[in-house]
Length: 259
Image (cartoon, rainbow, N blue to C red):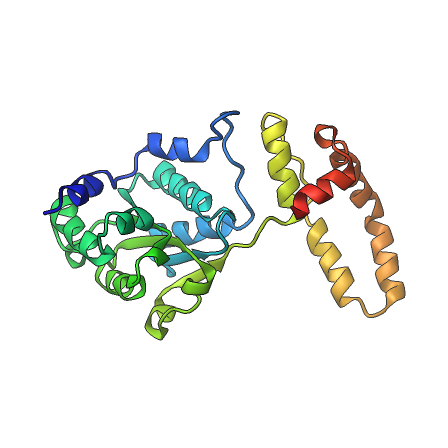
């Protein structure tokens, strides 16, 4: 057996220490704040681990640098902190650099690490795959994995273009969560969290939803105007708080967000 693969597999189990290093800013030592979609991922994990409710195969699809891997580690942290289930992480890009096929890696993982086949498992395990699209046969491999490992909760990240063009068989098995760039309020929340030692600036709860309802679903411009006037104080209070964030002008904050 390839010694590189053996070493790789022996280091797939995720520890609390590893997770902490992935969730903490190297300079400020603050944890990265969670995004809105984290609540959805946490619910998927909780539903399956407590009640066996599908989906149990989740893919995070989005642009590079949008935060997919951080969300993967935040979900892993939630699971390990609350359920203490064996969790394994596969960086598929690293496997590709070692010239190792993902299917081969999972075959050897069963033999060396689990010491049993996936279909023989009775206990729940967590399997994490980062940049899964880097393996050209990822779709077929993960379809087999899903069918065989019925006690596994599977979470993977990958390119939007490739994950959204998988086979029909995999479509029925995999729930795709599209991860978009920050909304403006997420940008401000993350920026304030990192710059104000953990203090996060957020608008009053429900403000975004109310604005969307007014702007897109009002019956008339007069009704929209009157409803917006009712929210004016809440909007202005939010802008007043953020416009001086880190001595930046509001224009600078908007430009930073666009960038």
